[in-house]
Amino acid sequence: MAFIFGNCKQDKPAAVSQTDAWGIDTVAIREFRKNHWKDHGCDLITQEEIQKIFNIDGKALSLNSRPLPNQAFCLHTWNRPDWKEREAHNEKDANNFLPTRNSLVVQVFHYGTGVHSSQQFENLKRDRRDTYEESVSGLGDDALWGTTIVTLLVKKGDSVLSITLDAMDNPHDNLPKAKEVAQLALLKL
Image (tube, rainbow, N blue to C red; front, top):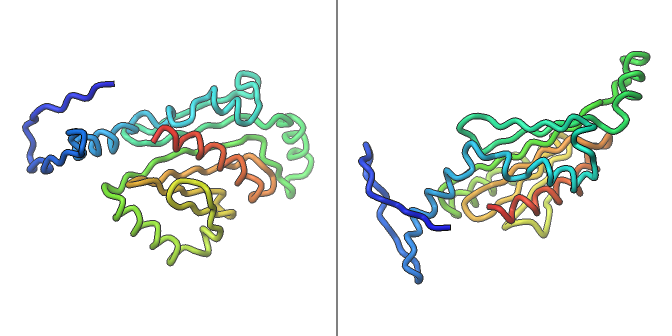
């Protein structure tokens, strides 16, 4: 894949070019990466990958993926395999509601530099430890899990990957699959 970065007329001054040992303009690459996932959030985890990770037939379970315009975001939803039985249960016992659909939200936040993303992550650890109560090892540069919001945050370089997965009845049971999703998405960042 070749990148061509030409001079563009801008309202604000362009970032000063920096080249690495290979002569690659690292500022231009950072800018490309920052904007690359906008409008392509559903490419971070595709429907085919969801079908493999969760061992489902996407067509039979109405797998659907929706991005948000101008964002690095994707919402995937699909029926739970026993959704019909859950709907029947919910009609009989509204006080003991069982979810009939799964959801997976994949989002990337770009902070510009690794230092800034590290600062933001440290702030989360300090200020939101009641929400992101569990440190997760083996993913990216750092990772946190929040059981009450079923969200895994993974810092990698100057970006943070957010995986929100609601597919299991016990919220903490979503963590193993969220980690699988994160591992795959991290390969693409």
